[in-house]
Length: 216
Image (tube, rainbow, N blue to C red):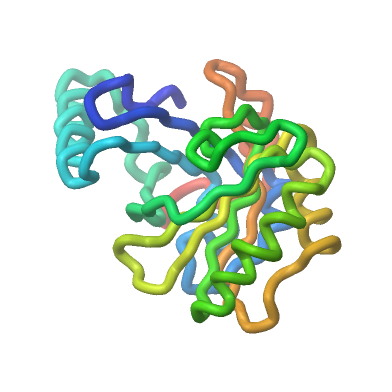
C-alpha cells in the first residue's frame, strides 16, 4: 500500500485515497469513466512543481527499479491504472473560517475528498467558481475547494472538495444543498477517504465486498 513516491525534485506532495464499499455506493459516474463498474477504488494525487513530463520520467524509472529489485511485486492481475491525467490548477476557495489564500487550499488538512469531474461551457465553469464553490465551502465539514483543468482531455475540469469528518455525509450534503449546474455534464461525482500510512481499517471490508477482485 505504501507506494507513494518519496520526496524528490518536482514532487511537492503525494496523497492516497480509497473508496470503501459504502463510498462506492454513493458514486455517480458515467460508463465511459475509468471509475465506472465499481472500479477505481484507489486514487493517488501528486502535487508537482516541475514540468510533469520530467517528473513522470523519474517516477517510471523508480517503478522499474523497485520491480527489478523485487521491492514491489503486487500481483499484476490485481492492480491496474484505470485513469491517469495531468491537471493544472485553475482556482481555489477556502472555508471562510480559516481564510486560506488560494495557493494554500490544496494543502489544507482533511480526512477525505469529494472528487468531481465535469464538462461544460465557459458559463458553467464560471458558475462553479463564482456560485457553487462559495456555497460549498460554507457547508459543515468542508475546508476548501480546488479546481483543476485537464491537460490531456480538453474541456474536462476536476473539483476537489476537502472534507473533515464523514465524507459520505459531506457528499450527500453537497448534492442536496448545492447540486450541479443543469448544463454541466458530470462524468464523476465520488467520495474518497484519505489513507493514513500503515492504517488500513478498510482492507477487510473491501476483501469481503462485491468489489472486483481482479482487473479483468
